[in-house]
Amino acid sequence: DGGITQSPKYLFRKEGQNVTLSCEQNLNHDAMYWYRQDPGQGLRLIYYSQIVNDFQKGDIAEGYSVSREKKESFPLTVTSAQKNPTAFYLCASSVQGGNQPQHFGDGTRLSIL
Amino acid sequence: RKEVEQDPGPFNVPEGATVAFNCTYSNSASQSFFWYRQDCRKEPKLLMSVYSSGNEDGRFTAQLNRASQYISLLIRDSKLSDSATYLCVVPEGTSGYSTLTFGKGTMLLVSP
Image (tube, each protein chain N blue to C red):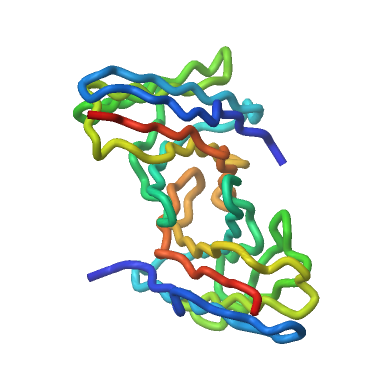
């Protein structure tokens, strides 16, 4: 059953701590994306990757880091430099070729302890 | 970043009503558009893709007006289960490496 899996579903971070959110897809999609959604707000792009071993900053990359060592995996690290990390984090993937829709995982809710 | 504007609503309609949402976009180079549905505290799910002047899928019709740069979504015979936030989505570029710009969404509440 193909899809995108995000884990964990809920995550709590202590002050000064880095945390890593997992995103795995078995759709054979080349492109993967990370978004942040705050209550009552739209999705904002954090980072995206169009191909393995390459990624680009989105609109709000400060305080975050990513890696793309495998096609299937695109983990996001929320570093201690991100001062307001409480949000709903969504990972998505799509085929290449331009103008393609993205398919989302079911998200990770990150909160500060 | 290009803008995508939507009326946040909420649109309150009774079951069986017809409701329409509009979305305006600023990227005149966009070739395709999407409507996503997002339930409360859930991920967005693709509802419809619009690649030409419009698309119809059952009770849902999407129309595109390139000259005025707006997209509409029409829902006929509304069901309680249609209650959700509807996101208008526009690609940033036209190449194989485009990203998507999401509107903030329009909330629909269908009541009995």
